[in-house]
Image 1 (cartoon, rainbow, N blue to C red):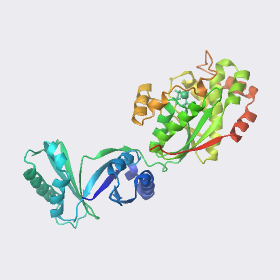
Image 2: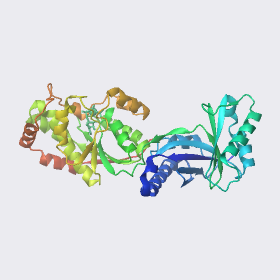
Image 3: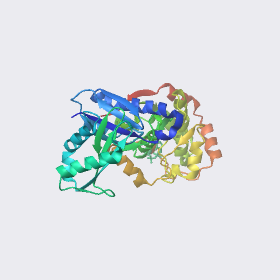
Image 4: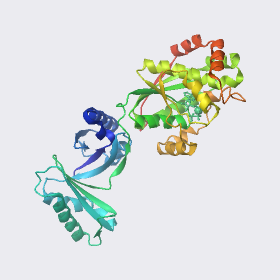
Length: 393
Ligand code: ATP
Ligand code: MG
């Protein structure tokens, strides 16, 4: 029996005249994730995307798994393609295709959608006929129209007739690439990969910036960041990662700035350098994993000082979330286990004993200017390491 995967567009539906281009991006993104497992024909009509495998040996479970991580899809399901677009073919196909599911259910209903109005039977007739056949073949079942365990869907479309049931929830969001580009400041922690995922979900194409301070931070710490980004790429698509050599800057902060301002000045320099990388990469925003009150550098005052270091808009999607809520998402996107591997981040190098939780911007800027970081910032930007990241599956 021939099968395809039917996908329901998400918020794309709201985009009016842009809908076509949103759908084109979505189709391109689906093609990209399915490419490694085989060839598919991907078409769209009436808020539905049809994913048709072009050879018999393609693993559709794997295809569904990959599709479940594409933003812009609210639901998807495997569906049988009826041999002909006739009522007889529908009545023959459904009980065979759904045999196992029907056997294990107790209650069901049939829902028919007839978007091809030339089909000679109306939806209620299709439901009645198919419901009758199912009851005949599976006498243990009863119909429950309000709260059925199983809903059998029949869709009569322009291209054919399809049968499916139990649609899976899609990743939601909007297609990556339709919301512009942004640079995410990525550490090896729990938060920043989640922040990256959340902004990709809103359609943003990512570039990653990571600050490394060898020998204070190890090669393993950088590898961990690559591993995290590979996981994020399953949702966000491939991206370029820039590793900034940050050792000299951090040493200068330690030598020339007041200790209680180490972290805040370091964070400001991270923003300044990231903004420059962002501009060079056509990005119009920065993303961080900051969450209000989580640590001393994430108080309202400290965030104000950090924010001032870049002109670009900074997205902080985790700002109002509790740590546990962030952890729950990191489990879902499978970054948690990697994030908790114990390698030093540059943020934990030279941490002050008593960081200022209410830094005054004027004094922070004065201290930063007095130390004078411009030549070192320039040098760091000249020595960026570029790594291309693609999904690990
Ligand atoms: P995370 O779990 O993301 O490391 P955190 O709670 O440890 O977050 P901080 O270490 O204060 O918080 O960092 C706050 C944010 O600053 C991070 O979410 C990230 O966006 C950015 N950041 C921290 N360290 C680095 C780094 N080495 N390279 C790039 N960005 C970083
Ligand atoms: Mg961190």
